Image (tube, rainbow, N blue to C red; front, side, top):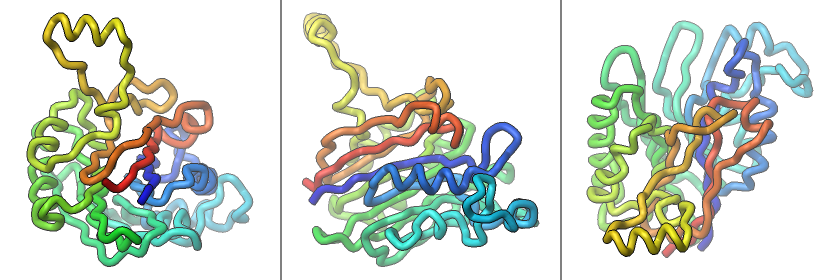
Length: 271
């Protein structure tokens, strides 16, 4: 069975400059993924101020703010959706979300906040696919390295408890792991691979030099931040039980306007 997946930090559906709504454009852009499963971070479940200011706009207006929560609006009639509320404030809340063409058997959001200034969570969804259960984990880790280390341990514990015995797993989201200190830990503890592990740029000369020196090719995730000129490697898709056919980062003017992160797409085949 083949599955097309995407991960995208949508910056709460507003532009990085002036915080103008981009919800309608995001819905159209997400549809362009043609993805079976979409992992979303910074999803606005409710925002009373934007609703009051832009909610009266016609839905054809590019700054309109739909009445439905963003994950429900993006899902439309083509996908099921689940939402994990992480950050709560007087005028609303936001968190992670999953859109899936497959039925979501159940979902659970686990609070992994490491301190009072960042609210983070892991949204776990069990998907009922034609090939059996697939476990999906939507992740958004903290800005501080110490927090990310503790949160990755919580992720490892959550996956081991909820998807034992090597069951198929997809873990995706914004790891904020710009120094790439977490990948080896996740590989060793969970038996996962990142979708760019074997798809990175390689050259015959580079391989020859490394072979002569007895070194392996460096394994690095893709650059996704900032979207206008990606440099930092923040967003990831880790898989277990899948063969990675291909993966790509979506570049260009459209994606630079919609969010500060560029989305990643990958085509997987269940092993």
